[in-house]
Amino acid sequence: MTQHYMTYNNIRLIRTLRRISAKQLAYRAEYSQAYISRLECGKRRLNTEVLYRIARALGCSIHAIINPNITSVVKEITTVEEQKPYNFSERMSAISNVFANE
Image (spheres, rainbow, N blue to C red):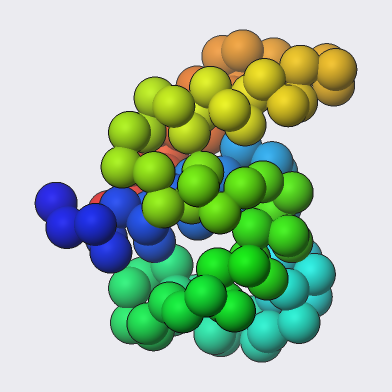
């Protein structure tokens, strides 16, 4: 798996974990929904500005997006979200769905 593919997958994973739709992410990052979709599919290139805007919109660090260690990404995101009540099985199901759609 290439670094770029992992980065695109991390965007989708973090968005799913945060329960943010592609439409909401697009609005928050000030991009079109089509752009976000193409970005998550790896059809658009990332640059520093895009990474910054996506990270800000997702409420995470740029490091979480580019980190190749998926376990660290999930841990970072769920640690931030610990204050919010969530169902563990629902969260794991969301993660499984991200990888099932590849």
